[in-house]
Image 1 (cartoon, rainbow, N blue to C red):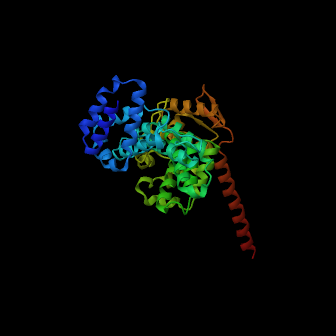
Image 2 (cartoon, rainbow, N blue to C red):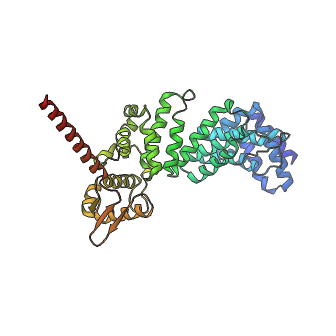
Length: 389
């Protein structure tokens, strides 16, 4: 075993990669204790500053070199002097991220040893743990591994409240909040994501205004895609009332958002032709086809238009409703039924006559008629007064 340790030292000192790799060709013949001792020696040696160039320039760039490193990292004793294995994992993580290998980078960082005991070589503060979990989640998001990203950001949320000096770690906390919003978005929890994005977009002083505007655009996207209901209407209102909303028209990616969001907030019917630019700006997970055969956008717009129609009509035949919604009558009936069951729409369906009745429907037209009548009455009074004079 000592000869293998010497062989490792010689290989590192002479930067001889083939010699280093050959050391691990007989690794499987060693006993468990010998493997752990040799692995610890190898890991400690690799983290020596004088070998960093060799490590990053040759060992990491070789599949066999990476394999040797991973073999050592999986055969360590319960503790390595100075927590050298954690140091090596950080080196490897940075290298893999620079190579665009986000999945393997996340896997490497997941195996960091973290201890709450201040006397341990693996002790990490709440801020350091949060940073690790956020990095893992960010990497998984890059590969659309939403379940793993969710798990990592949940762990970050478990320690972020324990950060002793939040002001000193404002940038980290913002990264956590941003990653959490992205995970909600990726998991199609659009209502919660919209709320988180909107909150982040108001972090004035911590982030450049241009970046904040992009985050506001993401909030608008998620608000538009969220399921219909009072909470969605509330978040639409908050985004609509943000004075920066009109500035999104200057960003090609979000140029269609202000008009669509305004129409949704004002309960105005949206035409399919108005959605082309908006749909082209969506991420793949936001274009997914749901179990009912509709895309997320189609479902959101149909639900919105259904409610908008309910503001104008007391009753409507499904043939006419389908024409307004841009879908077949049977699809309109199916969506209406689901919305009524889910409490998103107040109304009833007469399947015999093929009619949808809205509770309180037509109030908008009635109110409009009342306003016109009131105006005419006042106008007549003024006219009569002028004639008398």
